[in-house]
Length: 192
Image 1: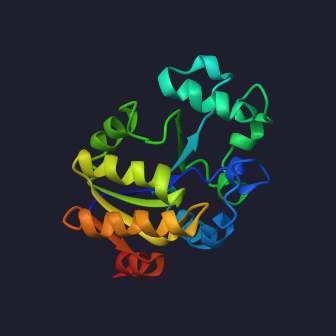
Image 2: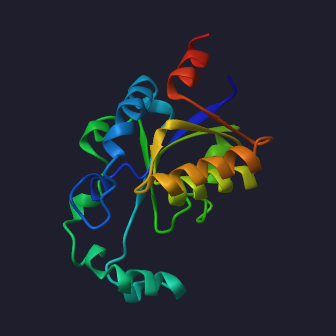
């Protein structure tokens, strides 16, 4: 296996718990994510989708987004809801955290700089939501030249239809640069 990292997208309390952004089937994929993270915490980076203090802190259409979701700004929510879920948080460190204010973890450039410095060429993606932040992470990784592996049984979304559509889009349009596999198959590859 090449030099790889596990990029675990937004496995946060704000999505796992009873909030307007709750992703009901996040718990269905957490077992696979926990297993990979516990086996390789030093290779795991947990992203956190960080909301602004208030909508007016954000530029352009992000301001409109948080005007719609004003109850999810840091001024309104319990700040600990932005934390990684407890089943994974105990792995930090050696697992790392990358905070982001947009869907993509690549926007700031820090992640790419860090991975480039570590000679990483493969990004293994898990987490949520498949049709938003996972999709942005996968396409961003492809754009930067990484081999991207999406573990299809370790990603989740709020709706089955768009989850399936996102996986089909990745599978059909990016097959030369991206692999979609099951968590157990990926873990077996690591052991061989």
